[in-house]
Length: 474
Image 1: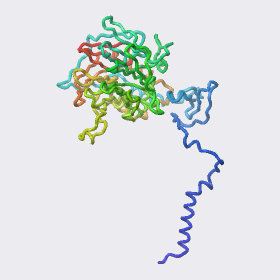
Image 2 (image 1 turned 30 degrees about the vertical axis):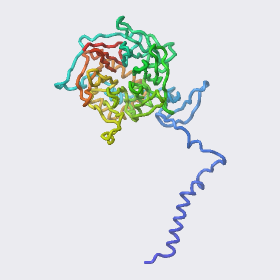
Image 3 (image 1 turned 180 degrees about the vertical axis):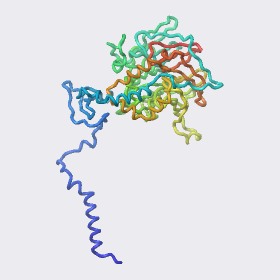
Image 4 (image 1 turned 135 degrees about the vertical axis):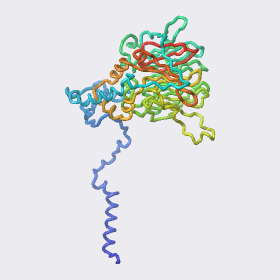
């Protein structure tokens, strides 16, 4: 049956109308543009909020802000790209009462997640080659005036160890005098930093040195400060110099572990989160944050390179003895990654730049150090349980809890002080299997373990929570 001319007329007319609607319609039915105007929103920087609805903005008389009201009844204050949004006020006195039921439900779930009790946390199974040693004669060395000896390092003369503390100081152990002396600080501001107080509240002013590593050829000490970025201080100590605080437009918000290649002087370090800072590190775990990075700083060229991104709380990092790869602890996933540095051989061309080195750890890994007997020591902050695994795989629980007016860092500290179960494991260099386990009998004493440094048949054990260093003769 032949198609009539009327059909073609309607078909062509419909097509023309469709084209006009798509290409011309917006200019006809849309709002009229102002002559000579420029749409600056197309290039504006978007700053995310934890909730919706920033209805209005204003600055205070000192020019700080802006302040915005959001849909959950809070008023937030912008503290710059380094600190982000912080809570300023609430518009209802009944805020906590209205959410009490939700709080109870979520608190139970999060308490299980944060739980450091060992009712279901199990140590690795003993194998024929595994050695489990308890600490019956562990020497405890107090860190006067502050707590939290996170990491240890010895200088090129073999003196030390050196360790960073919660008040921003780096101290050095004088063995023949059995005492600590001040060696360096990471900020020039020391007023209100030292002495007994809640150091966590002043970390962003006083500094919080975490990872440490000496550069062998110069004797300089590199410092990963959680707030001040990457720093360096000479062999005489004193005020450390900032080497790096950001990469391009993104600040280092949580500088954590580091190691230095003695051959190239290149510094490898981790930035644990682009959202959360150290004094709220539990937020990284509860929110399922995946903004951590493994990075490289070349002091010869001053260039900074991101080696791995989208990591879940990258923490300690160590270079292998032969310099072929890095190990990095991905704390939130309870695993160790291996990042290959020299993928130039034909055998490695098909290999990914990184792989899982160990994912059978008994808990949440912190720092990593080489053992002179071979392999790597992993400080395990606390053992995980089936309940913590469930919470980690259902991050909506943690995200819901973070929306409540609860200081989860204090909740975490309470559980840690109640009964901790930190431990250390040594992994074999070849397979990544656990070859040795050190676990304290007194869980209250070792609420967590951040690092184990082995030197001259002695283990130096640190914890971000304790006011002492542990020393144990193997």
